[in-house]
Image (tube, rainbow, N blue to C red; front, side):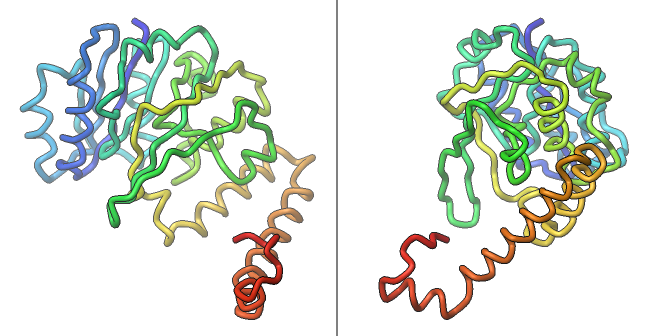
Length: 262
């Protein structure tokens, strides 16, 4: 089997239904669909049961967090590649799973661009990703797990997603796979999935934890780069504060400092 699509869910029945429907509407049988529910108390189980004929495997039991649930799906999967399409996110209406599977040509990571949608204002845009991501890129960004096909054996050998992290374990995996393990990868300049800005990693209240987890991972796994990384982050934060200062905004408004983009 070429592909396992994995959806994790907890008390998000409406989002889960949207995600499942985007998958089961695909006319392709060369994939399995797995749902890992965290013992939801809303209508999620009813949604799963109503669409159960389209789901290969599913379970509902307590878990210890997002990455514990994702690892459960990983260990259940049988496909050569895995795609994590979490509850609330979805395949685009014009996504052609047959064509997507034809792009799974043996590389460890095959990642696409990603349509990002903001439910608060119903606006969306397509985020593009670099053809050759490096340490500097991962120091401030990541690849899209909703838009990435990961060779299952690579993720298993890595040990799955670290459950010590709450927010950035998928970022740590992508960074390590590319920068430490020299995995093979391919970027396709197109998008097939939609990521909604209402999840835990998009919540501004979680940004301090996100940066703390990233800093800890880099300090532990990239010791030679750590001091340079810390200096770079500190200078970047200083520049951001400078850009946001009222005096700089006034100078930009009257035509000075056009080079200082925000």
